[in-house]
Length: 245
Image (tube, helix red, strand yellow):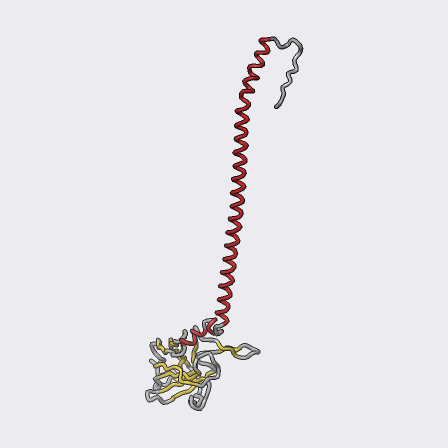
């Protein structure tokens, strides 16, 4: 309790003056318990609020900690499991399958020949240039152009006795009229020095055969090469036939 010290001169407080001082003082003292209760309630509310806040913060922290732990743990576990599974799965795959070449070579197992060229050079033109485009499993004869120079014929070759790649012109009786030895027709490898050639599945590309004779008796173009199967050095086979326009 706080004492109020009224430092007044002697005789300064008469009955009326004392009454004027005491009445407000008594009113003030009467009001003090109410304010004390309010202050106590406020303090109590503040303590409860602090407790609630502390409790909430504590729970929230624990909740966040649990969520973070569970989330991180689950994510880490799931990520690790999935990563390990994928790696394990890839380790069991053939390298050509991992790069998509397995599917590419499957499409070349039964190749298709398409002719889009509408015409061939006139009879007075000595030679012709044949242009082709290919996608996995399909080779298209796109056009035949005039050629003024004709190269001599190679061969004769036969898949039964020769290996390698070549292209023939044949007549309606399937007689070979002309042979051109080629390093590769539809390419299956590329040079990679110093290790030598590496297998590459032909996906999209162009090729052309030049200096072929414009023989009016020729009705077909025949490709000979090894099968496109991802293995180099296989036997030579008849690969494709195209009907000349």
